[in-house]
Image (cartoon, rainbow, N blue to C red; front, side, top):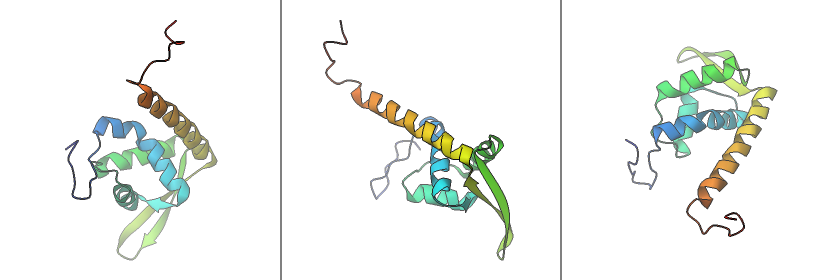
Length: 123
């Protein structure tokens, strides 16, 4: 449930807000290290990204792969079916840089909302 507080002071994120940044989070995570779907979910949760359903991550990985931002390979597993490992492509790194720049601009704009306006802007 959005806004739910956890014992370690983390808060479930609004699902719509999270969907807006999920691609950036996945690209960032997979640019740092190749990983498979469930491990990605676990790592995001460990980073404090709560309220994220597994059913949201897998389609996002598929979309990013279809866009050429991720590539994948199957790796045999001793504990079940083969795992699909993902990693960013050069196009994915470019997309990540673009998304992070947009995020910084949005965050700065959000931080400015409600602050004292600059008199020069009001003219």
